[in-house]
Length: 325
Image (cartoon, rainbow, N blue to C red; front, top):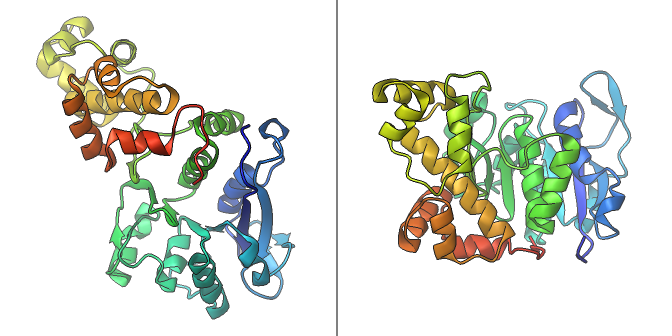
């Protein structure tokens, strides 16, 4: 691990704590990881309210301290909330506002977005939460632009994720921002999860649909991924799968949830992102390797999908360097 300023993560605990969401955050930030060196995260559990704290499953939680610890935190994680219609304690709302004003990153998983919304920290920003509650979040807090199909939303100092396992996606994204792609990939491998579940680390990440291994076109999709620099017309896809052009469009949509062209572009942008993060190749070289044609065409597609140009994305995740986050 490259040297990195000590970074303290505070994971909030509250009565009726969502055990899984808490576990996601602690698994990434709280476990000892000697392979990451001494610069890895420092983690503490902070009581969001006074009194005994019990978690789902009948567990009792003994935090390291109360809200007086939050000023020490560089990142504050709220792992869910006990109910989207339950108001958060005034002390918690005030402490979150103060932490944000002092420069801490505020992160919510699943229903925790409702608490951040009560703080006003999401006003004028994009956010997400579990799809089941997204419409309610948008209705109750009209100043928020809710993205119901996003796995997570990164607004810089405030971040939100969708339900449960999407919290892991966001936590891995934080590792990527703070320590770089190699560290994020290492943690993801230890957790036996994908380091990212779609084609990019954009400001918001749309939920991809997996390709079932037993589908009619699984082999074709693997071949395309291995040769993204080549031209993949509908006619060629159909010929390689030994079906008609109409059938290949149906098969690919059934397997991926996307039209062939949409799926192909997503895969090309996936490779482009990886090359931007892990190589020093020029924009033109990356465009050619990904089958995106000219550098101009690549820039247009990348900006449309990710919300920022390739050069800015590369500056955030430079090859061999550490992002300060």
